[in-house]
Length: 481
Image 1 (cartoon, rainbow, N blue to C red):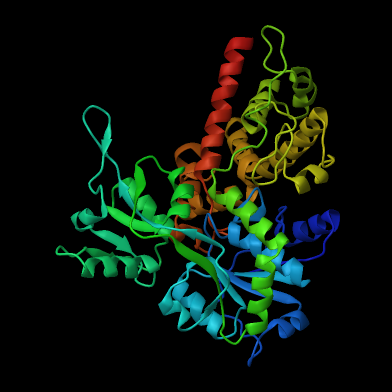
Image 2: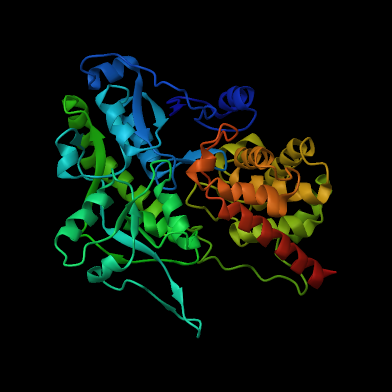
């Protein structure tokens, strides 16, 4: 279990100083990842809204996953995390996140008074309502079968299971505690051919099961459709088109005696602010997030042989890094498509797509000009290069670590280096070593290891980013030499 406390009031400068001293990186709202052997016990008796306000902290249980809570560019993100943070601010208290590995433990901790809310993509079921209360539904989703596409000789794809009457054709791996298991059992009792349900070990996450389907290690699993939309972008061979349930309500769980908290939560969720927040976050995390503005942006005309309207600025600032200016141009292209007004789902903005706290730290305002964005990005890259110069001595290798850190945050990349060392890989080589270790941070078995401090990572993004930047740089050099 992991404890993460998020301050309600802070100033960017003070925050950076405190966190730099605590963890050596710019990590907003998150302590080092550690897993104590025994959970901390909180006050006994009835814990409701009044005692939460006296305590000054709302304690929320969730999982480390692509939809609930994760770190992106050194900043906490996730649907449940951001919604919980908004509710805590509404209450006027801090948010404390406890990361828990499995749902069974989550419900036990909630009942034992170790937290106030369980917020982790929980389906509202009658069996769960026998022991806990639920909030007003946050959204609805369906359960879908995840199966591996079968490639035909002509290059097209087919599926082993095309409708729910064929579910018996594949063993389906799910967790016993999940709503997916109960849905499959329900369907199986109605069928002449029973469904072959395999119970997945608790230490293997739902994301791991999807990855195993993609790799062909297991034939099928089940997940919620909204999560499948997120995961589908990370894998090449999975299909999630077959729904096996009607739409089901997803909500937050509370103790039955937390009536004040439940009433206040439901009141906030139904308010104009709460409704807008839940809709905005659903769109942000489940509706194919992309850089806003980049699609409709029209790139100004450039001179023949030029890469962008900002070539002269890249040429001014790149020497501070000892870089070819076309490397900065490659980053800008993939970050914003040279759109100085671009803003991403994560909050990054501007030509170089810096996070707000990072931009401020390195001298940019909240509405940076193209030059300010390039100047701040150059300072940030210089900082990253200094950090990695103590760990990776080869200049050509180090640039890959710097690029990956620019994309995902140095914490995840340091984790990957530590993990590579732990697994006997070469921790100063990117391709086939640290990059492979980073990809392992998508699996619960690895992102919960003691040498990993920053948890789950959507690792395909930084690995692909490094490859794209270097490839674009080679292209720019070939046509501009």
